[in-house]
Image (cartoon, each protein chain N blue to C red):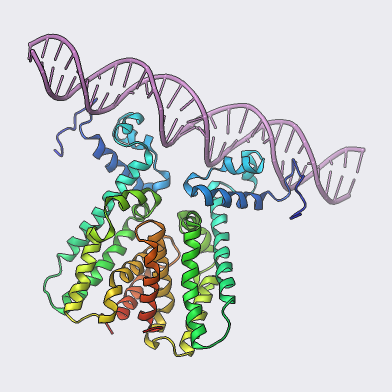
Length: 202
Length: 202
DNA sequence: CCCTTATCTGAACAATGTACAGATAATAGC
DNA sequence: GCTATTATCTGTACATTGTTCAGATAAGGG
């Protein structure tokens, strides 16, 4: 029954969420550069102007969508993390690798949405919302690296570079693959290289 | 005098280059999502339809521009490389770092153009043109890594990961900074971490 | 029950990408 | 040097887009 407003005709009931959700659907399918406000409105069955009561312009809608995607990615990562039990070295290693793997998997599964997240539309949105240190994905990364450190499973002198190096490397490889400049098969090698570099594996 | 066709009125003379060049100018200023074919045509003083004799659509023009930007970046990198003489360990290290630094500098100087290079418009363009191993930037990277290896200035077991890891890391940090998710000040730390990881520095 | 307020519609405007018929200039053959 | 061919560009047209704004419609409080 969702919000129980399915039959609402003139007053939609929850147009703001509907706009973001439909924008998500269409962006996922066609990419951000082909998303039109009018299509979103038509899909919902509402006039084009209706959207302007909730977003000042098309870019703001995309910004809001983009922001929600960061939450979605973090959700996915945490769901996968939850599957790994234990607190030993092996589990710590697995958790670190899971963070990288899920980042990549999510991007490959939803390349258009991934592109939106790191496009100009999300520039001010995410920067003003919160510094990166407070984002859930970043916190999880820090936690995983700390766990590796206390397990003695990471090169101590590399720890200060842990977050920056991991995020940059994983994001870089992912971006290059999504953009078509690198083949998917290379991602595991990058992750291997990163782990060896950090002293997580030999 | 350039191409000496400055006075051409009906037949422009070199419209194809003019289109790319003007597209470059406008994209540099406004970003790829705000580039319109009509503006490009107007800037040149030609009708909107004229462009369609050289490019099947707007996306193709952007693809051609994007492709030329990879050459431009490689040019810049090679110009900077040329300033470093010698064949010792110190020069090898400096060359490696220069490749990373120039990649970043170029992107920060021209964020809109950098975004275009790794957007969907350049997907088929660059993938079909040549595999990455044959691009000049990639060749220069391989050369720098080989030089480090023969100088004994790189961890031997890291060498197989050299290209993938370096490119991913530098591209990732650069992308995150250009997208506003990381502050510029962090780039040097990333490069430091990468060099330590590869065993280039302590 | 009415009146205020939030929500949505409808019509309008300028700008965009693109198609196509025709105009114009360059060039090749004689 | 003239003409026919061809490459190049214009003009007009159309559908679609983002956005604005006056007005219609419904919800909710007095």
